[in-house]
Amino acid sequence: MKNTLLYAAIGIMLTSAGCKHDPLYPAGYDPATNPISTGLPCNPDTAYFVNDILPLLISNCAMSGCHDAQTRAEGIQLTSYASVMQTGDVKPGNANGSELYEVLIETREDKRMPVPPSPRLDAAKIALVRKWIEQGAQNNSCLENQGECDTTNMTYTVDIAPIISSNCIGCHSGVSPGGGILLSNYSQVAAQANTGKLQAVVSHSAGVAAMPPGNRLSDCNVSKIKAWANQGLIQ
Image 1 (cartoon, one colour):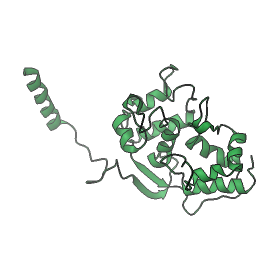
Image 2 (cartoon, helix red, strand yellow):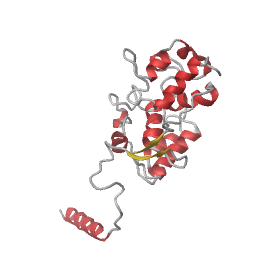
Image 3 (tube, helix red, strand yellow):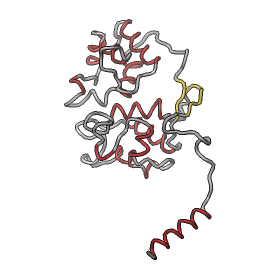
Image 4 (cartoon, one colour):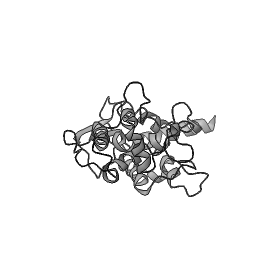
């Protein structure tokens, strides 16, 4: 009882004397359900949850058997901003103290994420997660070249591979790829595009499994994939 009263008193003192900060979000705003949009083109110096982080997590972590809404391995779900912040142990402004980041740089194979045999995230993706956390882990978004989507002279290496790497490769690589479909290299991606299946799933067309699940590619990226296929699947 004495300890309870002591802790309560300490809590009151800390609350009264502690530093006060301006709120991260406007009054009445719920970041869990409404991303803050700058209304401006994406800034390369900023990491955006909606544009950058969520596609990365869904592709590499929120798959069946891991951190999707059904499995919730170890109680962790990484399918939305709300679930990431509630279960991913993210400490805004402190990447090194955030479990979401620490498991990505874990050197022990049995502890790192994504779990083997899935490949580790590359350095650029890990740096992006770190930047997002260090910048406040906000539920933010930006405009991805709206009205300025250049789909001329599409090639796999320059235009398509980055889209596949960020949004698809986590599920469609390794020894047990999703749906038995591998998208690890040009030949595999081109094979899916040649049949029209790739274009259909990224467009979320009726009658096919929508990909990425729950997080449609931007209109520009969908247009790039379609243009690449129409232009002859140039490598």
